[in-house]
Image 1 (cartoon, rainbow, N blue to C red):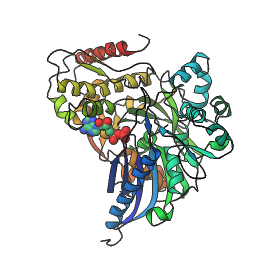
Image 2: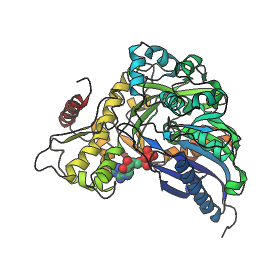
Image 3: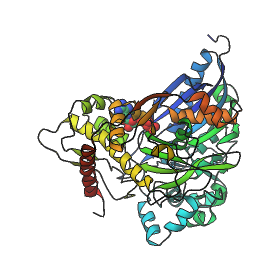
Amino acid sequence: MAGASSGPAVLAIDQGTTSSRAIVFDRAGGIVATAQQPLPQHFPRDGWVEQDPEDIWRTVLETARQAIAGAEARGFALAAVGIVNQRETTVLWERGTGRPVHNAIVWQDRRGADRCRELVESGAAPAIRRATGLVPDSYFSATKLEWLLNHVDGASAAAENGALAFGTVDSFLLWRLTGGAAHATDATNASRTMLFDIEAQAWDEALCGEFGVPAPVLPEVRDSAGAFGVTDPALFGAAIPVTGIAGDQQAALVGQGCLTPGMAKSTYGTGCFILVNAGRERPEPGEGILATVAWRLGGETVYAVEGAIFNAGTAVQWLRDGLGVIGESAASEALAAGLPGNEGVYLVPAFTGLGAPWWDAGARGGLFGLTRDTGAAHLARAALEACGYQTADLLDAMGGAEGARLREFEAGRLRADGGMAANDWLMQFVADIAGAPVERPAVTETTALGAALLAGVGAGLYGSLDEAVAAAWRPDRIFAPSMPADRRKALLAGWRAAVDRVRSGA
Ligand code: ADP
């Protein structure tokens, strides 16, 4: 029964790689209602990863309805909707019918790897970096969209004629939520397409030409907070304004309150992503580290530097779903903690290649140091340890990043979140191996919180992002590093030897 009004609330639609979630937050960042559904993935070939856009939509719609009903039952009034999404994943649909012309090509998909290798060999990398801040890689949307335009019958001509719409998942969801009224994205999602000039804040004509992307297929790029449109009343029984959109890692940066230059967050989900707020000037980070848009508000762009690792939680998922050695992901914690050390067992989870700082699409995973005593606990520990080692690798690479002001990290703190942040053993290991305290917030759903805060700013519930973060971000626990330096060095040496063995050029 709806009681007296409990105040305004914001629905965050959190469309992730492995699940769709809907979370309703109150103004203080408290979780009012939540719903979640798993999202199927398809692996048609080695290195190919697809999802059915109808599955994406169905899971979003059902979880959103469930969370809204939960919030309304508690007396909350929905003031706004924010969207946060898996980035780079590419959808192409018909404007007339709203029907996707193919499965979505997921960010992890490597089918564009050869194309990217050719680009690098032809000397295109510096120009791509200058415009987009990115390293030519099939991770980004450009080669995924190029593939769709070239492989779906008639797609290229239809795109040219304006009959098709391209979007990352946010655009696709916005289109469906608004009943086809809005074809737009925000600057953070645009910055991950490898088609967008992050300084000019405009689609790059030369790159669109290179990948055969005609202008009529592209969404309009807007601020991360503002009026994107209103939901079709047929969906939720009312027209609710959509007022915030951001890619998942950028939303987490907001949801972790990293609003000043140098503040850093690390998210442990399917992949692992470290973003550092780089301020209002476009950064020029070192090799293997990306320059990207942190958010855009009032037409003003804030930048971030980013280190991306493709496989973190996937290693745990593989133990659970592929090998069946653990019943649930959380069981990895007790198994890992039960061993006194890793006993020389290393897992390099390069299932779809290696991300930063190696950017090696040809690498594949490896498991090293096996003996007859190796058991499930060793595998679980190695899977978790891999997240810690990859964090240390990224921080090392970012430490040298010219233009990135890593003040908070230098001051010794990394704010951690994501599904794996619930794992205390992992958090302690990250602190130990990175040699820096790891701070975990009270609300680890920081991607969803970030979207809610952006949407709250867009809807006028908060006067500014600073006000939003002050109202909603609270720490839970700090994990202080306690590993002796020689042990840390030895573990890192073991890890780096294992990485050398899986690199495709090695
Ligand atoms: P995404 O948003 O990228 O889909 P999440 O942030 O929900 O992912 O994280 C899910 C990942 O975290 C999965 O790969 C899962 O195996 C892993 N995971 C979840 N809980 C734990 C845990 N307690 N310990 C280790 N791994 C975990």
